[in-house]
Image 1 (cartoon, one colour):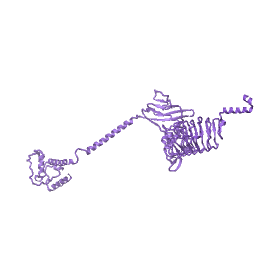
Image 2 (cartoon, one colour; image 1 turned 180 degrees about the vertical axis):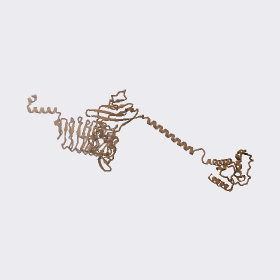
Image 3 (cartoon, one colour; image 1 turned 90 degrees about the horizontal axis):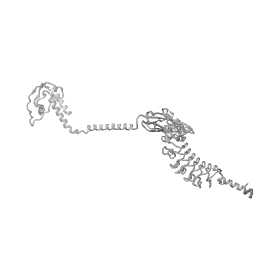
Image 4 (tube, helix red, strand yellow; image 1 turned 90 degrees about the vertical axis):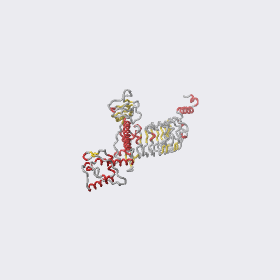
Length: 512
């Protein structure tokens, strides 16, 4: 028996035992808030009809449950002292509509936060930035319609975000965008039952399979299009949970019929008649250094094995082989060739499940610089054609002599033709008195010994000039181009023939 009890009686001994027991329990019974249930470091104030937060909360609390109450404001004063051990906070079903940006300053190590089933309509600037260690955030069944771009800044450890059953109209691509995501560790994003119309199909399709496996967008008025059909058909073939578990809820809005239809029905000829989905193959050029990822639907799979189209198992990284297995499970082909074409198989093994992934590889039988060479050849040919056209235009329109300077040459050519016709004629077809000085001109142009009829030489007289004042008479000739004028042995006489010759000469002069 306790010596103190032995001296002072049994009643005082009971008080000492109670005080010791209270000390060993850390003061749990004395520090538990009113109307709450305290079980060790778990404080449950659910359904306690609270309108304000308790003034004092145990500093050792790891779990706080304030769900199903009448709390409407979450200010920084709700936790007056730092709760460094708190990792889970439940605030669902309260009617909360105001959350201060400093509300989470005293809970820096919080990992689980439930704000579902409240009246929150806006996620303001940097509202969750203090929760740098948060992993799960529940915001479903609210009235959220506006999300500030900085609302989820500095939350690099967030893994699950539930935003379903709200009034969100814009897909928050910045949260999951490949290469520049604000939430790089996010593995589940629930955006179902909202008012999203545009899904950014191209960007979403580029996400890794483990991210698409946890991206839920069913029960949204998405605009019907064949790209959307191809996206979710691919997800179903890959057995992604987001497409398999909610296949009937994956719907889109048919603008023509003004009603929601299942996305799988877009393949129906009575619908949009979308073509059947075909798995896209990877295409490379000969000589490239390529890396093929094993895009599994489970994140963190470390054991991966590759089999080539020739049914060869790829070993770990080896400098002597052109095809090697990298430490992260990707396949590296240092100098790809046409012999490397075919179907590659990746076997992913984890503690949860095993998955087989197929990659069809096509290799073009030319290098990347082949295309620029072809471009240079085409460019050179085009330049040559343009220069040829320019030279032709210069030759046609930019010759040294213009049209106006060729008129004299034309007249000289006409006179030369007349002279030649007179020279070719073997017998005179007119008398000297009628021709005037034209005959003198003909005498000057032919040699002194002119050939006569039948090639015999005849003596020629000295040229006689026509006297001054005598009016020149128009020369009347038969057509110098006619065959009879050139080859006839006898002169052409007769008034009818002379008349015909005059008409021909007159017609030729008008034409000239």
